Image (spheres, helix red, strand yellow):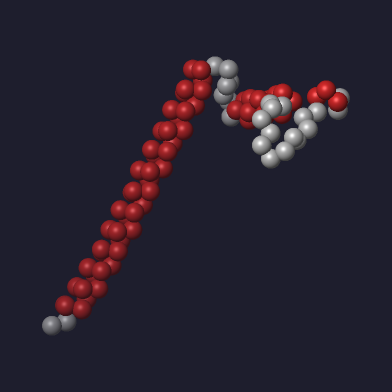
Length: 90
């Protein structure tokens, strides 16, 4: 690595930017989103990706609520069956 491109750590509160690190981070982000099928240089694609993530989150929340409702319903049925079985033998 050339001496000019090195970014030496200057202490716990380093304030100077490191262009090499910034460039590497930019390339890594672009590559990651490219793998996901999103061009980060296209605001429309980024917006669509965000909407897709929000939609997925909404579906997950709905599924979680549905699962909780199913558990409550099954618990209620079991409890009702137990009460019925205990009170039926009068």
